[in-house]
Amino acid sequence: MSTPSGRALVGMLSVFAEFERDLLRERVRARIAVAKERGKPFGRPAIARAMSEKIERLFAEGASKRQISQRLGIARSSVLRAIRGAKG
Image 1 (cartoon, one colour):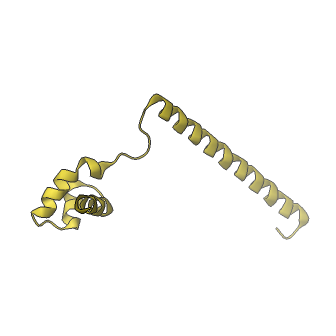
Image 2 (cartoon, rainbow, N blue to C red):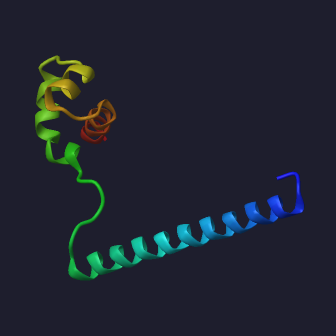
Image 3 (cartoon, helix red, strand yellow):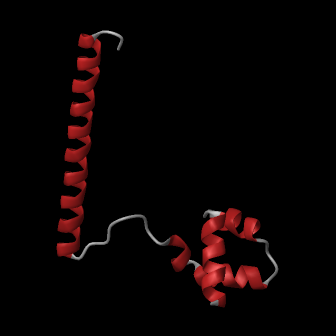
């Protein structure tokens, strides 16, 4: 990068990297649009919402948030979100 040709090479590589990133972003957005049109869900599944009753029951029984997350195999933050949603 200390010579003009080195700086030019780095500049060209960065242009190609940005181009590839933009193509990837475009393909992802197109796939999401197709999924919405077909009515298919996309993204990560809402695990805590599906288990909210079980989470609330375990919490009411006195289990800690860490114990609940380990027992159900979900993240502790998901447990916290489910408990806050039940209170609010």
